[in-house]
Figure 1 (cartoon, rainbow, N blue to C red):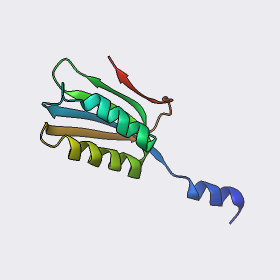
Figure 2 (figure 1 turned 120 degrees about the vertical axis):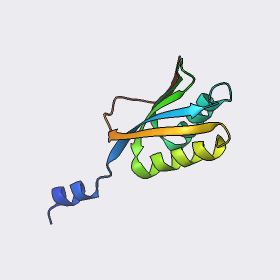
Figure 3 (figure 1 turned 60 degrees about the vertical axis):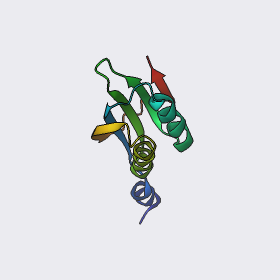
Length: 102
């Protein structure tokens, strides 16, 4: 196996999650906690409140890190979250940090 083949087989694929949280998820520190956890885990993207009461997150990182992020949010806000919608996409690489959008 040559060096190029070996390197490409060892690459870790990053993913993008597009997440919608529904329930009593606004006014409980959700966005600030999401940003804190994302920064702790090296996740890039953003979080924002939507006018219909949901919270939307776009997050990019390796798949196992994103799963850890989802678990941490779910455990911290279990009593507030009624429903979660998650779409997995290829990472676009458009983000430099994790922001709260207003």
